[in-house]
Image (cartoon, rainbow, N blue to C red; front, side):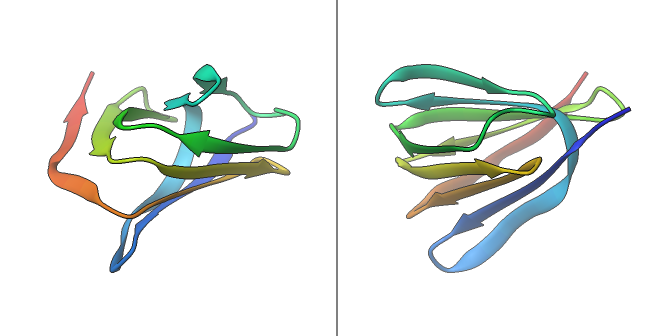
Length: 92
């Protein structure tokens, strides 16, 4: 099974890093859904929720104030000025 390597960083720290099978975020152009094999992309994020689904099926969500999302060769990098760490939750 293919997977994504995901790294989420805030201005002052790395928030989360790991493998995932799906990432969802809101950009200025609309909702983005990233799966393995996605074409390269650079998007500007708006305030809202970012969801990361792990290989095991757990879903982690955080709230960002905006930022950028980059996809290249199954590597997803999410950079935001502020990430609401209290919203980092895991659910099935």
